[in-house]
Image (cartoon, rainbow, N blue to C red; front, side, top):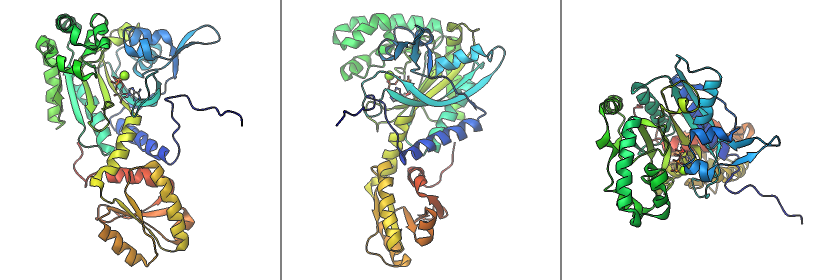
Length: 430
Ligand code: ATP
Ligand code: MG
Protein backbone atom coordinates (compact mmCIF):
# COMPACT_ATOMS: atom_id res chain seq x y z
CA UNK A 1 0.00 0.00 0.00
CA UNK A 2 1.17 3.51 -0.71
CA UNK A 3 2.07 5.54 2.39
CA UNK A 4 -0.66 7.91 3.52
CA UNK A 5 -0.25 11.62 3.85
CA UNK A 6 -1.11 12.74 7.37
CA UNK A 7 -2.16 16.07 8.76
CA UNK A 8 0.57 18.40 9.98
CA UNK A 9 1.30 17.90 13.70
CA UNK A 10 -0.71 20.28 15.84
CA UNK A 11 -3.19 21.06 13.05
CA UNK A 12 -6.55 19.47 13.63
CA UNK A 13 -9.52 18.45 11.57
CA UNK A 14 -12.84 19.31 13.13
CA UNK A 15 -15.52 16.89 11.98
CA UNK A 16 -19.27 17.00 12.28
CA UNK A 17 -20.98 16.85 14.66
CA UNK A 18 -18.24 18.61 16.68
CA UNK A 19 -18.37 21.40 14.10
CA UNK A 20 -21.74 22.19 15.66
CA UNK A 21 -20.00 23.09 18.89
CA UNK A 22 -17.69 25.42 16.97
CA UNK A 23 -20.63 26.99 15.19
CA UNK A 24 -22.22 27.61 18.54
CA UNK A 25 -19.11 29.41 19.84
CA UNK A 26 -18.95 31.54 16.72
CA UNK A 27 -22.68 32.33 16.87
CA UNK A 28 -22.35 33.39 20.50
CA UNK A 29 -19.43 35.63 19.62
CA UNK A 30 -21.36 37.23 16.76
CA UNK A 31 -24.52 37.76 18.77
CA UNK A 32 -22.72 39.27 21.73
CA UNK A 33 -20.23 41.43 19.83
CA UNK A 34 -22.92 42.77 17.52
CA UNK A 35 -25.07 43.59 20.53
CA UNK A 36 -22.26 45.94 21.63
CA UNK A 37 -21.95 47.50 18.16
CA UNK A 38 -18.80 45.68 17.07
CA UNK A 39 -18.51 44.92 13.33
CA UNK A 40 -16.89 41.75 12.03
CA UNK A 41 -13.54 42.19 10.27
CA UNK A 42 -12.01 39.55 7.99
CA UNK A 43 -8.26 39.74 7.52
CA UNK A 44 -5.65 37.74 5.58
CA UNK A 45 -4.03 34.72 7.19
CA UNK A 46 -0.73 35.71 5.58
CA UNK A 47 1.02 39.01 6.19
CA UNK A 48 4.52 40.33 5.66
CA UNK A 49 6.77 38.84 8.34
CA UNK A 50 7.94 42.36 9.09
CA UNK A 51 4.50 43.27 10.43
CA UNK A 52 4.83 40.81 13.31
CA UNK A 53 8.51 41.56 13.87
CA UNK A 54 7.54 45.17 14.43
CA UNK A 55 4.28 44.57 16.25
CA UNK A 56 4.84 41.53 18.40
CA UNK A 57 8.54 42.28 18.84
CA UNK A 58 11.69 40.37 18.05
CA UNK A 59 12.33 39.30 21.63
CA UNK A 60 9.08 37.44 22.20
CA UNK A 61 8.62 33.68 21.93
CA UNK A 62 5.85 34.22 19.42
CA UNK A 63 8.18 35.83 16.90
CA UNK A 64 11.46 34.19 17.86
CA UNK A 65 10.40 30.59 18.20
CA UNK A 66 6.80 30.14 17.17
CA UNK A 67 6.18 32.03 13.95
CA UNK A 68 5.76 30.25 10.63
CA UNK A 69 7.84 32.34 8.22
CA UNK A 70 8.55 31.55 4.62
CA UNK A 71 9.56 33.14 1.36
CA UNK A 72 7.01 33.18 -1.40
CA UNK A 73 7.98 32.54 -4.99
CA UNK A 74 8.75 36.21 -5.46
CA UNK A 75 11.25 36.13 -2.58
CA UNK A 76 9.07 38.08 -0.19
CA UNK A 77 9.33 37.23 3.55
CA UNK A 78 5.83 36.29 4.69
CA UNK A 79 4.34 34.86 7.84
CA UNK A 80 1.24 32.91 8.81
CA UNK A 81 -0.38 35.19 11.33
CA UNK A 82 0.35 34.15 14.93
CA UNK A 83 -2.30 36.55 16.31
CA UNK A 84 -4.96 38.93 15.07
CA UNK A 85 -4.14 42.34 16.46
CA UNK A 86 -1.19 43.30 14.24
CA UNK A 87 -3.11 42.59 11.04
CA UNK A 88 -6.11 44.51 12.32
CA UNK A 89 -3.98 47.57 13.07
CA UNK A 90 -2.28 47.26 9.69
CA UNK A 91 -5.65 47.18 7.95
CA UNK A 92 -6.98 50.15 9.93
CA UNK A 93 -3.95 52.26 9.03
CA UNK A 94 -4.11 51.14 5.42
CA UNK A 95 -7.80 52.03 5.06
CA UNK A 96 -7.57 55.29 7.00
CA UNK A 97 -9.94 54.11 9.72
CA UNK A 98 -8.20 55.67 12.67
CA UNK A 99 -7.78 59.40 12.15
CA UNK A 100 -10.26 61.19 14.44
CA UNK A 101 -12.44 58.10 14.46
CA UNK A 102 -13.61 55.44 16.82
CA UNK A 103 -13.80 51.83 15.68
CA UNK A 104 -15.09 48.61 17.19
CA UNK A 105 -14.26 45.31 15.48
CA UNK A 106 -14.51 41.62 16.22
CA UNK A 107 -12.96 38.67 14.40
CA UNK A 108 -12.88 34.89 14.38
CA UNK A 109 -10.26 32.81 12.61
CA UNK A 110 -7.20 30.58 12.58
CA UNK A 111 -3.80 31.59 13.97
CA UNK A 112 -0.52 29.68 13.65
CA UNK A 113 2.24 29.14 16.17
CA UNK A 114 4.96 26.50 16.11
CA UNK A 115 4.45 25.27 19.68
CA UNK A 116 4.65 21.87 21.31
CA UNK A 117 1.16 20.45 20.75
CA UNK A 118 -0.76 19.32 23.83
CA UNK A 119 -4.35 19.53 25.04
CA UNK A 120 -5.39 23.16 24.54
CA UNK A 121 -2.21 24.07 22.64
CA UNK A 122 -1.95 23.55 18.91
CA UNK A 123 -0.04 24.83 15.90
CA UNK A 124 -3.13 25.92 14.07
CA UNK A 125 -5.64 27.24 16.56
CA UNK A 126 -8.48 29.72 16.43
CA UNK A 127 -9.15 32.94 18.19
CA UNK A 128 -12.20 35.06 18.61
CA UNK A 129 -11.21 38.59 19.47
CA UNK A 130 -12.24 42.22 19.62
CA UNK A 131 -10.35 45.47 19.06
CA UNK A 132 -11.52 49.01 19.86
CA UNK A 133 -9.65 52.07 18.56
CA UNK A 134 -9.66 55.76 19.28
CA UNK A 135 -10.90 55.65 22.89
CA UNK A 136 -8.54 56.27 25.76
CA UNK A 137 -10.63 54.58 28.45
CA UNK A 138 -11.18 53.35 31.01
CA UNK A 139 -14.88 53.30 29.98
CA UNK A 140 -14.11 51.41 26.77
CA UNK A 141 -11.86 48.99 28.68
CA UNK A 142 -14.85 48.25 30.90
CA UNK A 143 -17.03 47.70 27.83
CA UNK A 144 -14.53 45.33 26.22
CA UNK A 145 -14.28 43.29 29.43
CA UNK A 146 -18.08 43.30 29.85
CA UNK A 147 -18.49 42.04 26.29
CA UNK A 148 -15.93 39.29 26.94
CA UNK A 149 -17.66 38.41 30.15
CA UNK A 150 -21.06 38.25 28.50
CA UNK A 151 -19.66 36.09 25.69
CA UNK A 152 -18.20 33.60 28.17
CA UNK A 153 -21.39 33.57 30.24
CA UNK A 154 -23.52 33.10 27.17
CA UNK A 155 -21.48 30.03 26.38
CA UNK A 156 -22.59 28.82 29.79
CA UNK A 157 -19.32 29.22 31.71
CA UNK A 158 -19.48 30.05 35.34
CA UNK A 159 -16.51 30.04 37.68
CA UNK A 160 -14.01 31.54 35.26
CA UNK A 161 -11.78 33.96 37.13
CA UNK A 162 -11.07 37.38 35.71
CA UNK A 163 -7.54 38.51 36.57
CA UNK A 164 -6.67 42.16 36.22
CA UNK A 165 -3.49 44.20 36.39
CA UNK A 166 -2.15 47.55 35.27
CA UNK A 167 1.08 48.06 33.37
CA UNK A 168 0.69 51.83 33.66
CA UNK A 169 2.27 54.30 31.27
CA UNK A 170 5.51 53.55 29.38
CA UNK A 171 7.44 55.53 32.03
CA UNK A 172 5.99 53.34 34.78
CA UNK A 173 6.95 50.27 32.89
CA UNK A 174 10.51 51.42 32.41
CA UNK A 175 10.94 52.13 36.12
CA UNK A 176 9.36 48.83 37.06
CA UNK A 177 11.39 46.91 34.54
CA UNK A 178 14.59 48.11 36.21
CA UNK A 179 13.36 47.10 39.66
CA UNK A 180 12.35 43.71 38.33
CA UNK A 181 15.68 43.15 36.59
CA UNK A 182 17.50 43.96 39.84
CA UNK A 183 15.37 41.43 41.69
CA UNK A 184 15.73 38.73 39.01
CA UNK A 185 19.47 39.18 38.80
CA UNK A 186 19.76 38.74 42.54
CA UNK A 187 17.85 35.44 42.23
CA UNK A 188 19.13 34.31 38.85
CA UNK A 189 20.71 31.03 40.00
CA UNK A 190 17.34 29.77 41.30
CA UNK A 191 15.47 30.54 38.07
CA UNK A 192 14.92 28.09 35.21
CA UNK A 193 17.18 28.48 32.17
CA UNK A 194 14.52 30.12 29.98
CA UNK A 195 13.80 32.72 32.62
CA UNK A 196 17.50 33.45 33.14
CA UNK A 197 17.79 34.25 29.46
CA UNK A 198 14.78 36.52 29.59
CA UNK A 199 16.17 38.75 32.34
CA UNK A 200 18.14 40.84 29.91
CA UNK A 201 15.85 40.58 26.93
CA UNK A 202 12.27 40.57 28.13
CA UNK A 203 12.19 40.54 31.93
CA UNK A 204 8.43 41.08 32.29
CA UNK A 205 7.88 37.82 30.50
CA UNK A 206 9.63 35.99 33.36
CA UNK A 207 6.56 36.75 35.48
CA UNK A 208 4.63 34.60 33.02
CA UNK A 209 6.86 31.54 33.57
CA UNK A 210 4.98 28.29 34.05
CA UNK A 211 7.89 26.63 35.93
CA UNK A 212 6.80 26.07 39.57
CA UNK A 213 10.26 26.73 41.08
CA UNK A 214 10.47 30.05 39.25
CA UNK A 215 6.92 30.90 40.29
CA UNK A 216 7.91 30.34 43.93
CA UNK A 217 10.79 32.84 43.65
CA UNK A 218 8.52 35.33 41.96
CA UNK A 219 6.23 35.46 44.97
CA UNK A 220 8.64 38.03 46.42
CA UNK A 221 9.22 39.99 43.20
CA UNK A 222 8.41 43.70 43.24
CA UNK A 223 4.81 44.53 42.25
CA UNK A 224 4.20 46.90 39.37
CA UNK A 225 1.24 48.33 41.28
CA UNK A 226 3.71 49.97 43.67
CA UNK A 227 5.19 51.85 40.71
CA UNK A 228 2.02 53.34 39.22
CA UNK A 229 2.11 57.12 38.72
CA UNK A 230 -0.98 59.31 39.16
CA UNK A 231 -2.39 59.01 35.61
CA UNK A 232 -1.90 55.23 35.71
CA UNK A 233 -3.54 55.02 39.13
CA UNK A 234 -6.52 57.12 37.98
CA UNK A 235 -6.98 54.93 34.89
CA UNK A 236 -6.75 51.73 36.89
CA UNK A 237 -9.11 52.96 39.61
CA UNK A 238 -11.61 53.96 36.90
CA UNK A 239 -11.39 50.53 35.33
CA UNK A 240 -11.97 48.75 38.63
CA UNK A 241 -14.82 51.06 39.56
CA UNK A 242 -16.45 50.50 36.15
CA UNK A 243 -16.25 46.73 36.52
CA UNK A 244 -17.64 46.91 40.00
CA UNK A 245 -20.54 49.09 38.74
CA UNK A 246 -21.42 46.27 36.33
CA UNK A 247 -21.07 43.59 38.98
CA UNK A 248 -18.09 41.99 37.24
CA UNK A 249 -15.85 40.38 39.84
CA UNK A 250 -12.10 40.35 39.31
CA UNK A 251 -8.90 39.49 41.11
CA UNK A 252 -6.09 42.05 40.96
CA UNK A 253 -3.00 40.07 40.03
CA UNK A 254 0.21 42.13 39.95
CA UNK A 255 2.08 39.32 38.23
CA UNK A 256 -0.19 39.32 35.21
CA UNK A 257 1.79 40.84 32.34
CA UNK A 258 1.84 40.90 28.62
CA UNK A 259 5.34 40.49 27.30
CA UNK A 260 4.90 43.14 24.64
CA UNK A 261 6.13 46.69 24.99
CA UNK A 262 3.13 48.35 23.47
CA UNK A 263 0.78 47.31 26.27
CA UNK A 264 -0.22 50.05 28.70
CA UNK A 265 -2.64 50.40 31.61
CA UNK A 266 -5.18 47.63 32.12
CA UNK A 267 -4.41 44.04 31.12
CA UNK A 268 -6.65 41.09 31.91
CA UNK A 269 -7.18 37.36 31.51
CA UNK A 270 -9.96 34.89 32.20
CA UNK A 271 -8.56 31.72 33.71
CA UNK A 272 -9.86 28.32 34.62
CA UNK A 273 -8.25 25.63 36.73
CA UNK A 274 -9.85 22.94 34.58
CA UNK A 275 -7.49 22.89 31.62
CA UNK A 276 -4.16 22.30 33.37
CA UNK A 277 -1.37 24.59 32.21
CA UNK A 278 -3.56 25.80 29.33
CA UNK A 279 -5.86 27.61 31.75
CA UNK A 280 -6.13 31.01 30.08
CA UNK A 281 -9.19 31.05 27.85
CA UNK A 282 -9.18 34.76 27.02
CA UNK A 283 -6.53 37.47 27.35
CA UNK A 284 -6.31 41.12 26.48
CA UNK A 285 -5.52 44.64 27.43
CA UNK A 286 -4.85 48.18 26.35
CA UNK A 287 -2.18 48.65 23.69
CA UNK A 288 -1.89 52.37 23.15
CA UNK A 289 1.63 52.12 21.71
CA UNK A 290 1.01 49.77 18.81
CA UNK A 291 -0.59 51.90 16.12
CA UNK A 292 2.27 54.36 16.23
CA UNK A 293 4.79 51.53 16.30
CA UNK A 294 3.29 50.33 13.00
CA UNK A 295 3.50 53.73 11.35
CA UNK A 296 0.09 55.21 12.19
CA UNK A 297 -0.74 58.24 14.27
CA UNK A 298 -0.77 57.59 18.02
CA UNK A 299 -4.15 55.94 18.68
CA UNK A 300 -5.47 54.46 21.91
CA UNK A 301 -6.54 50.84 21.54
CA UNK A 302 -7.85 47.97 23.62
CA UNK A 303 -8.84 44.40 22.83
CA UNK A 304 -8.79 40.74 23.74
CA UNK A 305 -8.39 37.34 22.10
CA UNK A 306 -9.88 34.07 23.24
CA UNK A 307 -8.69 30.58 22.28
CA UNK A 308 -11.58 28.73 20.64
CA UNK A 309 -10.11 25.22 21.09
CA UNK A 310 -9.84 25.88 24.82
CA UNK A 311 -13.44 27.11 24.93
CA UNK A 312 -14.62 24.00 23.09
CA UNK A 313 -12.64 21.71 25.40
CA UNK A 314 -14.02 23.42 28.44
CA UNK A 315 -17.56 23.29 27.10
CA UNK A 316 -17.22 19.58 26.51
CA UNK A 317 -15.84 19.04 30.00
CA UNK A 318 -18.42 21.19 31.71
CA UNK A 319 -21.34 19.73 29.82
CA UNK A 320 -20.20 16.41 31.21
CA UNK A 321 -19.18 17.56 34.65
CA UNK A 322 -22.58 17.78 36.32
CA UNK A 323 -21.45 15.60 39.22
CA UNK A 324 -21.11 12.48 37.14
CA UNK A 325 -24.86 11.93 37.17
CA UNK A 326 -26.83 10.84 34.16
CA UNK A 327 -27.63 13.83 31.99
CA UNK A 328 -29.65 12.55 29.06
CA UNK A 329 -32.12 9.67 28.70
CA UNK A 330 -33.02 8.60 25.17
CA UNK A 331 -36.41 7.09 24.34
CA UNK A 332 -37.01 5.40 20.99
CA UNK A 333 -40.71 4.60 20.64
CA UNK A 334 -40.55 1.77 18.10
CA UNK A 335 -37.98 -0.55 16.56
CA UNK A 336 -36.99 1.83 13.77
CA UNK A 337 -36.71 4.81 16.14
CA UNK A 338 -34.56 2.71 18.40
CA UNK A 339 -32.16 1.91 15.55
CA UNK A 340 -31.90 5.59 14.66
CA UNK A 341 -31.40 6.50 18.31
CA UNK A 342 -28.53 4.04 18.72
CA UNK A 343 -26.85 5.28 15.56
CA UNK A 344 -27.26 8.99 16.16
CA UNK A 345 -26.31 8.80 19.82
CA UNK A 346 -22.95 7.33 18.83
CA UNK A 347 -22.33 10.53 16.87
CA UNK A 348 -23.44 12.69 19.78
CA UNK A 349 -20.91 10.79 21.91
CA UNK A 350 -18.22 11.50 19.33
CA UNK A 351 -18.90 15.20 19.77
CA UNK A 352 -19.34 15.14 23.54
CA UNK A 353 -17.09 12.34 24.75
CA UNK A 354 -17.89 12.81 28.43
CA UNK A 355 -21.65 13.26 28.11
CA UNK A 356 -23.54 10.85 30.36
CA UNK A 357 -26.32 9.56 28.14
CA UNK A 358 -28.38 6.41 28.48
CA UNK A 359 -30.29 4.97 25.53
CA UNK A 360 -33.36 3.10 26.74
CA UNK A 361 -33.41 -0.53 25.65
CA UNK A 362 -36.16 -3.10 25.64
CA UNK A 363 -39.02 -1.03 24.24
CA UNK A 364 -42.17 -0.01 26.09
CA UNK A 365 -44.72 2.76 25.78
CA UNK A 366 -43.83 6.46 25.78
CA UNK A 367 -45.32 6.70 29.23
CA UNK A 368 -43.27 3.88 30.71
CA UNK A 369 -40.07 5.09 29.08
CA UNK A 370 -40.59 8.62 30.36
CA UNK A 371 -41.26 7.26 33.81
CA UNK A 372 -37.85 5.62 33.71
CA UNK A 373 -36.30 8.79 32.30
CA UNK A 374 -37.66 10.79 35.20
CA UNK A 375 -36.55 8.21 37.72
CA UNK A 376 -33.03 8.16 36.24
CA UNK A 377 -32.29 11.69 37.44
CA UNK A 378 -31.36 12.82 33.91
CA UNK A 379 -31.92 16.48 33.12
CA UNK A 380 -33.05 15.99 29.52
CA UNK A 381 -34.77 13.31 27.49
CA UNK A 382 -34.41 12.81 23.77
CA UNK A 383 -37.64 11.32 22.45
CA UNK A 384 -38.23 10.00 18.95
CA UNK A 385 -40.99 8.11 17.19
CA UNK A 386 -41.78 7.47 13.54
CA UNK A 387 -42.64 11.10 12.76
CA UNK A 388 -39.30 12.36 14.15
CA UNK A 389 -37.41 9.65 12.29
CA UNK A 390 -39.05 10.69 9.05
CA UNK A 391 -38.08 14.33 9.63
CA UNK A 392 -34.52 13.59 10.84
CA UNK A 393 -35.23 15.29 14.16
CA UNK A 394 -35.60 14.40 17.80
CA UNK A 395 -37.60 15.96 20.58
CA UNK A 396 -35.38 17.53 23.26
CA UNK A 397 -37.42 17.52 26.43
CA UNK A 398 -36.44 19.04 29.75
CA UNK A 399 -37.25 16.66 32.58
CA UNK A 400 -37.17 19.47 35.13
CA UNK A 401 -39.40 22.01 33.45
CA UNK A 402 -36.47 24.23 32.49
CA UNK A 403 -37.70 24.86 28.95
CA UNK A 404 -40.37 23.89 26.45
CA UNK A 405 -39.86 20.69 24.43
CA UNK A 406 -38.42 21.37 20.99
CA UNK A 407 -37.67 19.45 17.82
CA UNK A 408 -33.97 19.54 16.96
CA UNK A 409 -32.18 18.19 13.88
CA UNK A 410 -29.74 15.46 14.90
CA UNK A 411 -26.71 17.40 13.73
CA UNK A 412 -27.66 20.18 16.17
CA UNK A 413 -28.28 17.93 19.14
CA UNK A 414 -24.71 17.93 20.50
CA UNK A 415 -24.27 21.72 20.57
CA UNK A 416 -27.81 22.18 21.91
CA UNK A 417 -27.24 19.72 24.76
CA UNK A 418 -23.90 21.28 25.50
CA UNK A 419 -25.47 24.71 25.74
CA UNK A 420 -28.37 23.53 27.90
CA UNK A 421 -26.28 21.38 30.22
CA UNK A 422 -23.58 23.99 30.72
CA UNK A 423 -26.16 26.50 31.90
CA UNK A 424 -27.35 26.30 35.46
CA UNK A 425 -31.09 26.94 35.95
CA UNK A 426 -31.75 30.35 34.37
CA UNK A 427 -30.06 33.19 36.25
CA UNK A 428 -29.66 36.92 35.67
CA UNK A 429 -27.23 37.85 32.88
CA UNK A 430 -24.76 40.62 33.49
P1 ATP B 1 -0.13 30.95 26.68
O1 ATP B 1 0.46 31.62 27.85
O2 ATP B 1 -1.17 29.89 27.01
O3 ATP B 1 0.88 30.47 25.67
P2 ATP B 1 -0.37 33.36 25.19
O4 ATP B 1 -0.06 34.43 26.16
O5 ATP B 1 0.68 32.93 24.23
O6 ATP B 1 -0.97 32.07 25.94
P3 ATP B 1 -2.15 35.08 23.69
O7 ATP B 1 -1.15 35.43 22.67
O8 ATP B 1 -2.53 36.06 24.72
O9 ATP B 1 -1.70 33.70 24.39
O10 ATP B 1 -3.47 34.52 22.97
C1 ATP B 1 -4.78 34.65 23.51
C2 ATP B 1 -5.43 33.30 23.75
O11 ATP B 1 -5.28 32.45 22.63
C3 ATP B 1 -4.80 32.50 24.88
O12 ATP B 1 -5.29 32.93 26.11
C4 ATP B 1 -5.27 31.11 24.55
O13 ATP B 1 -6.62 30.91 24.97
C5 ATP B 1 -5.22 31.09 23.05
N1 ATP B 1 -3.99 30.45 22.56
C6 ATP B 1 -2.74 30.99 22.49
N2 ATP B 1 -1.86 30.13 21.96
C7 ATP B 1 -2.57 29.00 21.67
C8 ATP B 1 -2.24 27.73 21.08
N3 ATP B 1 -1.01 27.45 20.64
N4 ATP B 1 -3.23 26.81 20.94
C9 ATP B 1 -4.49 27.06 21.37
N5 ATP B 1 -4.86 28.24 21.91
C10 ATP B 1 -3.93 29.19 22.06
MG1 MG C 1 2.03 31.32 24.18
